[in-house]
Length: 128
Image 1: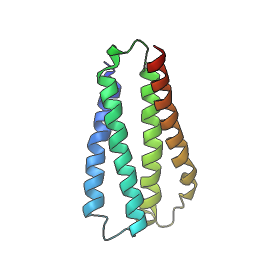
Image 2 (image 1 turned 135 degrees about the vertical axis):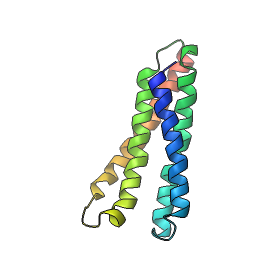
Image 3 (image 1 turned 30 degrees about the vertical axis):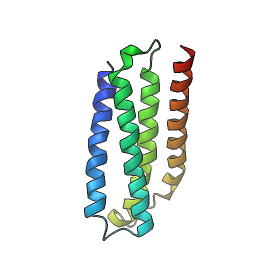
Image 4 (image 1 turned 135 degrees about the horizontal axis):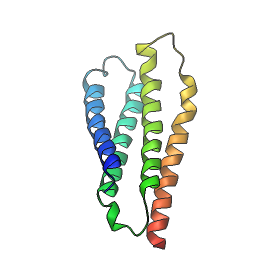
């Protein structure tokens, strides 16, 4: 079992629940509808991706190939995708003078890394 990956993905599952509740209750009067939607997308993807990584990490010994690097790429992609959105949405409200618009390029990089890492996993699953 990939103990570190299991722990990290479980932690990110927990954070997605916390962030979802935070968004639904504390942010609904602060954020615009578009910002709240973006925040919700980040929470939803974080939860789904973390759960998938958690399940794969718990079952890593059942694969005939090493999935440690794939799991790390999945985690990194999820972090880059979701947390760049969190910072983009929340930074104008938390630190108004700080311009983090450059993070907008990080979101698709994280999404791309996530997609590629899942595609590699699926390819290796079929190959082996």
